[in-house]
Length: 279
Image (tube, rainbow, N blue to C red):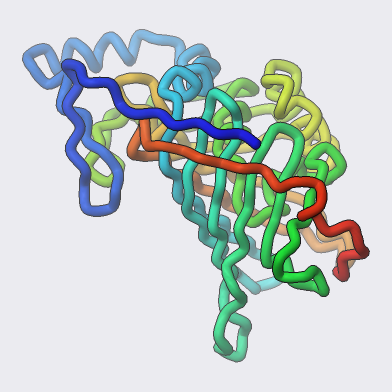
């Protein structure tokens, strides 16, 4: 069991919730806006991004929204998720919504996913799994390191992928759902990211570096003035093992409400399904 409750400390930073749940930082607005931006421009973008995951650990927790769009052979599907994440303990909980089938029938029941170092737990997995049981997957055994398989990229794995940034360009200031952010665009190397990742993500990212069609991952990322990721989009490419088609995947993670309470309880052994899972 992993339990963590965090509350935002009272301080000089005031946060105002936007309609989408994302937050707008109220600091850093007094005088010298252009000078501050000039200072950001002078920073090495690659070094800035290498430190982004560390800023999330310092922030502690957040809420998260995910979107994963897959396209192959003219077919495009989108899977969405929402939940919470604890970056210090590297655990999270997401409710993942699968798309409707092509006939427009009512969609599948949401899948509850628990994310933990080296493991993915899924409930309502279907395919003959009892409704009261969890399926546990060792992420290091997945050819994509669970960057794609779960229908949502683990938020901390998405951040640690930036440790492998090889090129990056500062694109300027913009906003994400009302939050002032700095936009960076570049490419990351999964092999380098795996080498520099935390122990919990290292083996999974190594698997992804071998399993994807290319270890180079283009990205766009938006950081707030505390260096925290507010939005990151990765573009993956892998080969469908059954049909040998190349699948293009765009995975987007939004982080907001930093300091939100997180209570993630991993399943007990007796609650994990040990039978065969249908494809």
